[in-house]
Image (cartoon, rainbow, N blue to C red; front, side):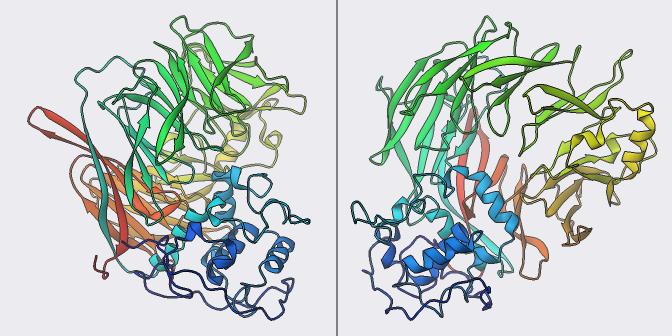
Length: 617
């Protein structure tokens, strides 16, 4: 199997199955330290896995990848790291030979850190967080085991991007498949719980296949050779199977949080090639939702009483938190967490309520948005604690679009930015607001995708005190960046760095357009592909690939080293429901599908590996 985690000899390609097009030599920056002559490269046992080797046993090109990714934003840290590794970093090897990560745009490295904030150097658990012990007590800096480095699997797997970029075509090879049958009896769970789905751990080394339609669940683990295998769970009640309806991997610890159809909320810990139950709450007939980080949990019982829970310091048990000023009301849809997870947005029948967390650990209802009967849309900015809300038009109440955010005192304020209602959304990084023009109405051409740069201060866009809000709204619409199409836009998707936008049409023979933003900030169509109609599109974390799928096919769009996009590979089968990249292992694609044979319905999760089309198995 082609996998960058497989041990190689010194100087060998980390992913030899890909064409060996190395990055061009680069002149070192003027601020880079010049190293003195180093001792010869330390040799290491040929069969020892990478994760078992000490820092001094790693090849220099791998160290360059680590340095570039972790420390490239701080040249002083680069210098200090080079000095610490002078025995294994040669003067003519490092700095001059920038890794693929260094050649990726800064926005990619920023996005990676946003996706994995717990891995920052500021965290005490990070092996690069503190220097070596001065008095030699404890483990020295250079002899720390590389297994402790959280990004290791990601660094090694993403190195395949360098190989993939130059491949004209991909071949997708099935690697692991799990099939579970439909449950005989399906309870009336809230519609917010998925019928079947999967979630990945933050390192992407664990995967959970679950859902309320399935009669069981499966946990998969990825080893250092890239092989996936099932792992067992030791439940406290010794049950062999369980229907998991809600789940999330904790961001900061090796914990898996689950909610089962029996009403149990379990905390699982990875141990000894399996999982053991370390915490359990019994919450029957309740809605349960975990925060993205896994630190908080929101529940709502049959009496419509909302409770917020917090994971304790040992990361094993849930503790109830105090909630003030919130009267019992039935929740509609999912609870929304702000990026900092200090604010919650709760949607009830006649209003949307914001809960704020104070320094004493108390949640309080400090802000309500009256919506009479319906709220068209509400979502937090992906990077800031700001809620975008649009209220639909009513016979005696005009609609509006507004930003709700806390001021310096913590009090929430509404800033109206449009005096009419239409679907407006944030881009991936929150740098843009965008809307499909056919949803706005009026004289705006229906083939446009409209983009607005997010203002530095929302007060610059405020229409709260405007005497002629309609005139201001017209002027704002005219100021939009217009991405013109020859069709009405069906979908619009930003890449993780907001440097690309993928759009699709409504037509049966769909048109796929990929727009690229130049360094000057102008947009242009880079590629138009007329292949098939995608129902779902997703960018990879690096933004160098996009996956598109419909019920019959998954397509992999890739960008080559000339920045041209094309359909590089595809998977053809029936019943496809979902497809996405493994975020930290971009050469893997996870596909969900279902099949019906007679009176039997089966649901399948399959992991595919992307390989060079000219490379045999």
